[in-house]
Length: 313
Ligand code: SF4
Image 1: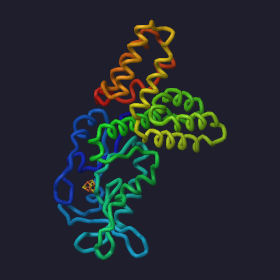
Image 2: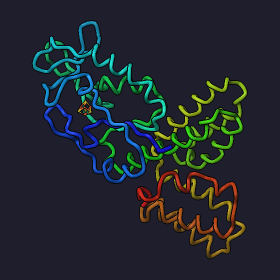
Image 3: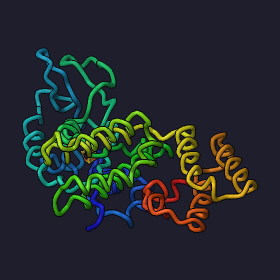
């Protein structure tokens, strides 16, 4: 089964925006496309608003409700239609491993969407698009990212890591969740989680160790939710360097002095930002081939997503 990712139809290049245009993302339409199966949705078109259509926006009412209304005539309210559509489509998304939404949209935006008062006063960029808000509530573990933020290399790498980890977890548990499968999965993700968050690394370890305190359904969801939260944190150079040093430790007694110094120097050059992550990882993989180690060979840290995305270069 392919990695399924939900996506705002306009980000995929479909001419569904209110002005008849699109917001195609090159990363989504070219780099990521061959590796995933997209589920494209335009909620505004799906509720029959047509294209082109008048602009809409989010409005806060006197009783603190958020409504989706037409910008020029706020008596035209699309809230009920949007919520009905959204609630109806949500069950179809249980198999998704990620979702890419269009930034700033009152329907699809993930954060910092403009909010207005009933009299038209701008209240600030403080809302979530109505459709995406429901998506986030329905699937709190789902990796969601905006098209604009995917232009940032660190955020793009982070999102892709989460998507492939989520997919791996879904595939692992597809025929039923067991504690044994969870322990094996967690063991493979230890170094990747450590790179994202040393604190979460300890918390997830504790959760797995206390597995018997939870019902299987509770544990299955809780682990995925906590894993995805942990991986939301950007893996910094300092944290990657820490992981690389841990990995180096496995070969310490097997390498001669010169080789050890070369690897130490390369990790330091990476930490200082002089070489990409791929450099020390490749050298470590070389030693892994020379000195096979089953525990390390299964570590997802070495290959968290398809190499052709070039995100570690
Ligand atoms: S942002 Fe969402 S609602 Fe607006 S055009 Fe894109 S897919 Fe449609």
